[in-house]
Image (cartoon, rainbow, N blue to C red; front, side, top):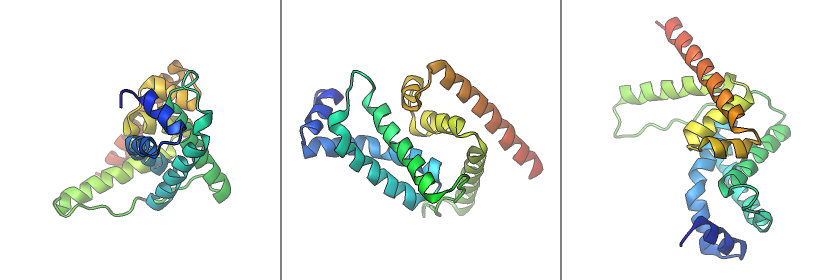
Length: 182
């Protein structure tokens, strides 16, 4: 396959292999984004599946000249998570990750990693939604500033400001928790 544009054109024409390749390329990032928005592995998996179903249904409407495919796909994910919260009538959902300890990892390291993850997750939940979305898209999904701006319908300068404020808040929150746990 020569380019993502070719892959998308084939998928728009109904080519199943192209759709599978798009899924393989993006499903992990979409899952991570949704997990950090909803906080439950099973719900994030269900929503990820729904994102790709919606993608398939809407692919004929995608116009690459107006937005990148990745930004378009993550807009679907973001809108779906908003719909999920509306249906659930939840505002501050703080469910914790399932226990995912590797048998190869020493127990003390696994517990420390788990606590770090839970502290980060609790700190992220405390951020305003727009700041949390920027942090998740930039550092967990790995999007560039331009893609993040496009996904969230904000300017690049706005994304940089949200990221800066979020990182300052996260650092202060996590430092305060460390001090109080000493």
